[in-house]
Length: 179
Figure (cartoon, rainbow, N blue to C red):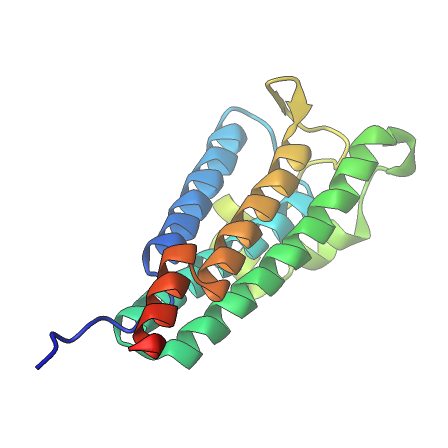
């Protein structure tokens, strides 16, 4: 009798967990910048919400994968990739506004809308938009929105690799099918 093998088509748990950890670190960094006096703008808040969505969906993908619910795990990972794409779109708009500061005006109607959302009322220290989109801190010579856009691309790449399967898992799948 052959020893039982793990299902090679199963979503790898480590990549979604790594994506979730990266989201936690990014959100912690955003809160640290806010603590240093950089008030988040409406686009910052939308990016935080996207990172939070990726965090929860990546955790769901990892948990579902551990429970061998492969289709549900892949579905959660696909939704996380879609959240990455949405966050990247917001970050790209934010980068454009940083590069074109004359395009922003004083009070942003989006800030008023976001500040009336329930999540902004429950957790104002994390989701209240008080800053201007063109006033962003810089890290290693680049604006935080640019780093955020790169973060979304990195997370999407990790999750797509998890969805498609690692090369080693594909090789094991081929070996099992040839047995």
